[in-house]
Image 1 (tube, chains in turn brown, cyan):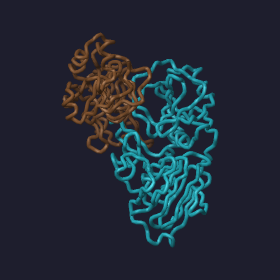
Image 2 (cartoon, one colour):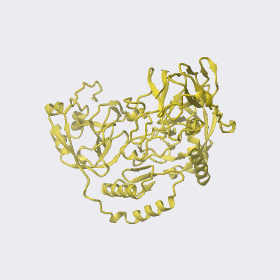
Image 3 (cartoon, chains in turn cyan, red):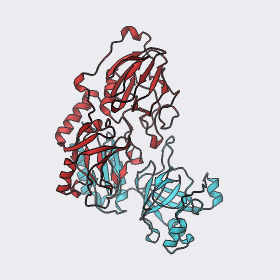
Image 4 (cartoon, chains in turn brown, blue):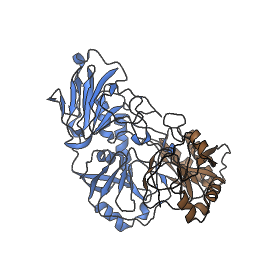
Amino acid sequence: MVYVGDSIDIGYVPKLALLCEQLQKDFPDLVNIIPSYTSIMVEFHPSYDVSKLTQYLSKMLDQFDQLKASSQQKLIELPTYYHPDVAPDLITLAQQKKLSIEEVIAIHTNQEYTVCAIGFTPGFAFLGVIDERIAHPRHEEPRLQVAKGSVGIADQQTAVYPSNSPGGWQIIGNCPVSLFDPHSTPITPFNVGDTVKFVSIDKQEFLALGGVIEHSKERVK
Amino acid sequence: MKALEVISPGTLSLVQDLGRKGVGHLGLSTGGPADLHAFCWANYLLGNQANAAVIEITLGQASFRAQADVMLALTGADMPATIDGVAIGNWRSFLLNKGQTLKLGYAKKGLRAYLAIQHGIAAPKIYGSCATVVRDQLGGLDESQGKALKKGDMISSTSTLDSNLSAMFSAKFTPARFIPNYAQKIEIGVLETYQHELFSSKQKSAFYSNIYTVTDKLDRMGVRLQGNAINPDSKGIISEGIASGAIQFPPNGQPIILAADRQTLGGYPKIGCVTQMSLMKLGQARPGTSLQFYAADLEEEIDRYRKFTRFFGV
């Protein structure tokens, strides 16, 4: 494990992405390189000669503050339908935040987010950092099923569920674009360090893009 | 070439090779055998490549019919095996002639058996592997998209099978000293790492002296244990990469050991990792097994695991 800090700092992310990219290039035999908010997990075969790797990593860490991330990271736009039809928590969240639904949407779409980590389920990108005015903790009891495409909020993070799965995030919308397809290349559009922006779409556009409206019994009152 | 037809897949039968490397940053699990030891022996007994795909059979009660004369090897859990009703035993290679049926009974000891086919199972590779990870919808036979084997599936070998097998066949056996006994009480080695400093010395000694029970909440993602609860001084940590064998403590204080299909990131504090050699043992632990941890020595464990990987070429 390589740690670069002990609290979340969005500034780490592009640097970690760069470090992973160089690691991959200079040490192509590593089993896995998994970045997250403040760390990189490097996995290698037991017979791997780690002395060169650790030397390299400690040199990179010394220079970490000076690392200049390339500006090649993608901007990914995610069309999203913000409506109680697909967002069981939208009304409650707006009420608790003393905002109108329109204001919640405006705040959520107004900003560009950074892909800080990918995990939990394949193609699930943790995006940070959202405006404090709409930040909200997870449900205490996670839902057994969150629909594919659900756009959620957990504390100061936001994300899209790429497939149906259990989950406890506050669901405020649905993005009809496929974000995980095991049989396409790449399987997910996201890379750590990429920029993501949400774009509000209406029901017609949502359906035209393949969005599905299911009537969930599980709305949180 | 067609080799076997699945007559019954039992509780869960999955195609597995050594797993998917270099995909953790996309959120994909490695997959691969739950018990690397028995997996490797199955291929070794047939002279297969170390990464050849085999069938991992959980709990047994599976059966397969030969579509041609095929050479097979069976290792792992003790699931009484018969060919057309005649017992054959396991940890060995054997011949299944066209039309014959191999039947595996309910596992008497251990949890997972490995059935290898000469030259390995033909299955499409995605990210370099055909390992089945159900959660990721990846791996398995053609078009199966991460599904377990089902009745009627046709399993092919990657290469033409020798037509004159029975004349040249001689059974190979795993030497008895390498066959584990899959005991009801197991000792599991731990390398302290990650957030082990969040655990007080009192909590650590409780961790090593506790007799844990393997619960029925166990699958290829993780094994949940039950014992005296231990709650480290933490409300959760910043999500980070989860290594094979990581031991995490969720808020209920009961450890979960993370296995082949584990999620790639997690935010629960971890006391360390189960050694790779112990993890293979854990892949055979049934619900109700008693488990005690011991502190393992890093250098010794690296040495042991290196020897293992060299022997099998993995």
